[in-house]
Length: 425
Ligand code: RNT
Ligand code: ZN
Image 1 (tube, rainbow, N blue to C red):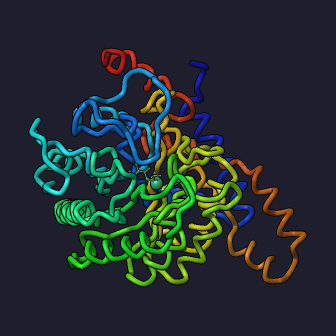
Image 2: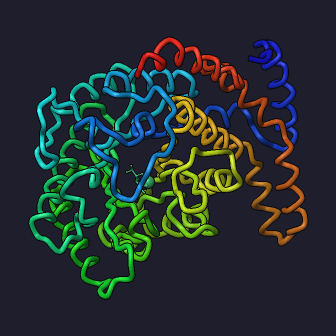
Image 3: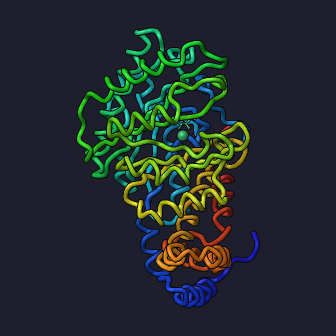
């Protein structure tokens, strides 16, 4: 690809940027140190279009879809881990992996989801230990015959509900085992697809059933040192356009009443509704939240994360609010139309870049100006900040962390594509 900056150029540009930021009272070294301490949870499902390894002919259901047919998707857990190794090597910092239950390794033997045990994830744990990654987890309430009706934890059928309750309980135990073995709590996130395509008569009963199912799932006590539970709401999905049982209000109430984490997915709201504005609101009542950093485009909630205004606003809210310790940052998108490893890397690097920009704000000064009522200066300063050389700080950060500076990481991905992904036919 095009010519790349030399290390010296990166260092020289950084020295100038450092001075420029110091001039407005911002310590770039402190910002980089803070950034290095942030772990993103990469979603395993970007690597194989949310397929999982239960059976090669399982169809993705639940009202979510990965479109595109870019070659090279991971077909086995080993391939997925190999792809993830490449992705992590191109993302500065140390991060986590977010697994779904359908990524169990059962040695070719079918294991029902309510029978899943920690041993079915032993190889993931072994790999995570080796790489120094924390693990997060998700029960999988879709792509299964018992989810075909479109209802799981809120089904009118007690047998169906019981099956999924058992699955979720099994998954929390797996999450706990991750936490114990890796020394960092696993966030186990519940998202269910339940909802109606068309206008329901009774909106109440499925929600009361869901509440009861969640109560049963969470009645098993697990030390928060090992596992943290989260619940994720949604506005609509494909086939659940008119009504989703687990809506934002439902889960906000549930999370507050039960002391679990609320998961905010950036693609799960009305098109002009943003999660950046929700963080300080829900964190007034909740200890911690989980984010699914994603990007909605029209009806789809799961495009690769770009460095948009909203991504910057999310990062600003986390940093300005002093919420870094209370917000677990996960990614959630699936794009099968581009190189899947690149999708992870682009989304992760953008999320980190947004966080760095937020860490480079002269926050005390901005707050002071706001409190003084000088909104003219606030506006002017916020706009000027957009032109400061944050890119030079980012490049220096990448250099120090030993990952490619700039778009050079694409060369490495394309090289991996030629060597490895192209052989997957
Ligand atoms: C779906 C939710 C959920 C899923 C994953 C695969 O709308 O966002 O988080 O994307 O569980
Ligand atoms: Zn999500």
